[in-house]
Length: 238
Ligand code: NAD
Image 1 (tube, rainbow, N blue to C red):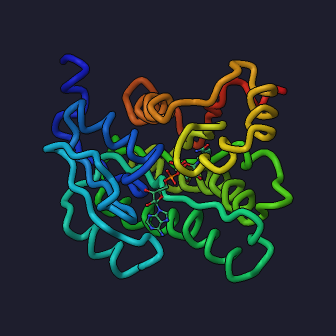
Image 2 (cartoon, helix red, strand yellow; image 1 turned 60 degrees about the vertical axis):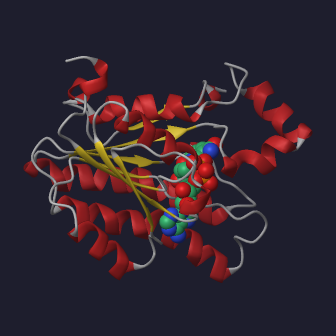
Image 3 (cartoon, rainbow, N blue to C red; image 1 turned 180 degrees about the vertical axis):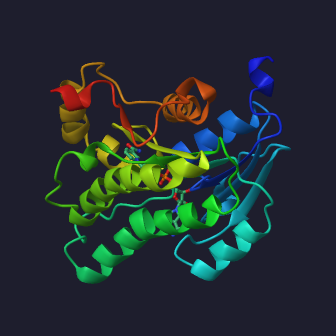
């Protein structure tokens, strides 16, 4: 087996697969042989196309649409629910708080439940946590609560799904160069402070998250479940 056939015969679902970290996971798996269903918003702005990738416009908070989309797939070997948002300055307002929690946490639980019914023994789910699973965020309470929730969800689903041979883990990215980060990156003061505190002194590349997601999906991690692995250039160590 060469690395380009590593995922031959496997099917993956990636929510938020139309941008940033999710898109990097889609590319990484598709280019190694997986059939990948990439779901998200604004699919017309997603330029990446590959013969193994099926792109679909889908709002993860639309429960019926998610159930129908999962219904069209026979087997899901890998699930990466990467869709997520953060809303600067408005997360203390309840409608925004609820919206962030519904996308970043409730919809993740929903897709995990739906995918579990299609997942064979040996299947893997990799959720996307954050540094804000560890830190609070005064300006973004919903984002921090949702990402703290992801770590606990991972531990809970790992226990619950283990009897079926399904592993559930998360990566906790640091500051990764994606559209989500663009406003902070553009602010020289904020980006200077971030890089000054990051031992590896740079932003991460989305593919560096995809590689660790791939590790957690693979047999190399066959005894790893319930873990949330920081991929942050050492940011959490400081
Ligand atoms: P991004 O903005 O590039 O991508 C977000 C993706 O989520 C897009 O594909 C978008 O279409 C999708 N999405 C948003 N709302 C949706 C909805 N209602 N239904 C379906 N899809 C929806 O951001 P990103 O940086 O790639 O973020 C991906 C994940 O990584 C998020 O969960 C984010 O919280 C997490 N994360 C990112 C960073 C970072 O520094 N970029 C750090 C830690 C965690």
